[in-house]
Image (cartoon, rainbow, N blue to C red):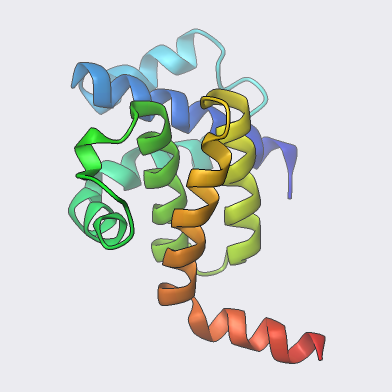
Length: 146
């Protein structure tokens, strides 16, 4: 996976966190990230898709998360919530992105930004969502490996 996409995800998680905490206008946050060079080494188009896609599909994303989390989505740690929402967006709406890539990138984001051990929580939730929403893809990969 390209480093530019990884950097886009890192910036998107930070921007989503800011949006969740402040409720600021998405375009204002995006402009701020661009002005402060947070997107210098990121794939800007992918950052924009992720950052605007999560709020656009928030109800569907939170509904998918609610099936597998142990508390109300709004009560999840804000950093983990931003990572989970981003990963769920990719699982639901970026079907050309292999589920293993989404899981690995989300785990790395949790290791980078989350509390100790949060990567295990993120992995557990997103793995369950992947099994439900990407079951056909997972079965195909398993059969191909046999």
